[in-house]
Amino acid sequence: MTKLRILGVDPGSRYTGWGVLDQEGNRLIHIASGRIEAHKEGELPQRLLKIHQGILEVVNAYQPQETAIEKVFVSVNGQATLVLGQARGVALLALVEGGLRVAEYAPNEVKSAVSGQGKAPKEQILAMVRVILNLQGQKISEDQSDALAVAICHANSRTFRNRALQAGN
Image (cartoon, rainbow, N blue to C red; front, side, top):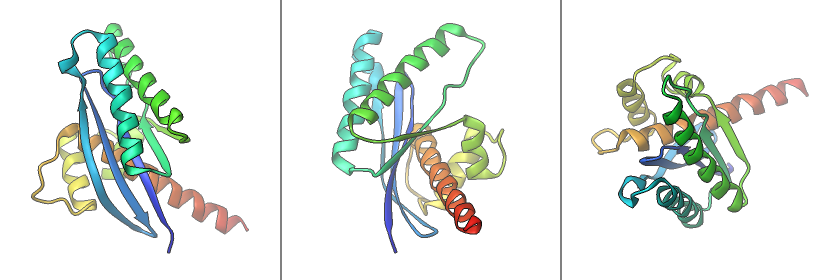
């Protein structure tokens, strides 16, 4: 059985969540997760540098074979959306610098893949991530949970895509 290592990223200008899991057939195994705390760096340029460096460190430490990132959620606050887009941009840059192809998923796709509901609240996503990855009793932040949800979404999408390709042959 082939093992595939997947890195999921939930970008944010203050906290960027990341989660690494291994997919072995239908099994998903939590390897590590964390968050890059860029808010301590002060101004936006320094926070963006911290995100970039942090993602590169995760890529180098865990050597993922594939990666996925959440698409930007467009909010009513245009300035917040712009800043989030910049954080996402430096995370994408770091992933590509690390030699990875990047899959992108909309927030409702991620929520649907994990909970079955595209509008599920964060608490439900956290609970489902804990169940799926057998993390009950472990403390994980919302940022970590969201990043792991992105990785789970990617693993599920790969599985469905591969089955569809096999059925077409």
